[in-house]
Amino acid sequence: MSKNESATKDVISPSDGANRRSARNFLLQPFLQIQLGLASLMLSFAFAGVISWLFYIHLNQFATVVIQLTDAEDAVLKLLYSSLSEMRNAVLGTIAVFLVANIVASIFFTHRMVGPTVAFRRLIRGLIDGKYGMQIKLRDGDAFVEVADELNELSSKLADKYKDEKKSGK
Image 1 (cartoon, one colour):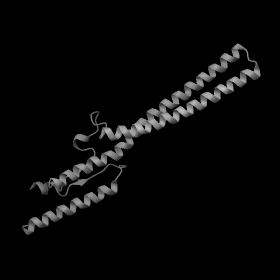
Image 2: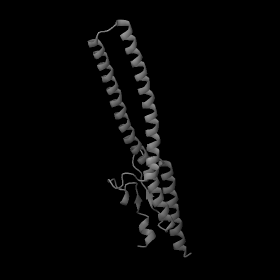
Image 3: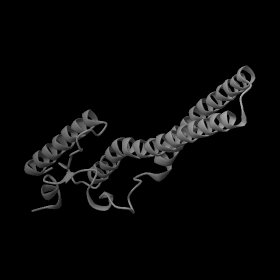
Image 4: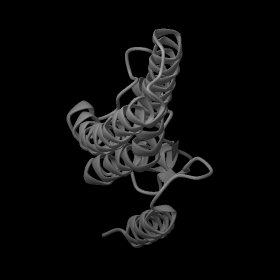
């Protein structure tokens, strides 16, 4: 069996070979994935900062109004400031959870986009090397499924063309 005939049975997927999920391959294309993740994180920090600032300003204004209107005693003031402090901590905790979830979602979704590109590059490299007939199999939910189908069709047609040329002696 020749190199090209055996290649017709090859199936490439994003998780093949060096790209199996492991700590070492957590980021498939680190520069791109970190860039997208940082952009998402920066937008999240900006949003969280604005929301925190709005809560802080309005709650402090509310506390000032309550103090002026009630001529509150020290015990009431302590209770009010304690409540404001708990609210601030809850908001900051929620923001922290949101940022962690954002990082996880960024990595997950970039894997769905970058993983197929790794498989595409392997297929293209195989075709350049004369391994016609290789196929790409993407994971459920990956991006670019239509592109993978078209590349698979191209690869199959190249394999058929190579077999026809080999039979005709060209």
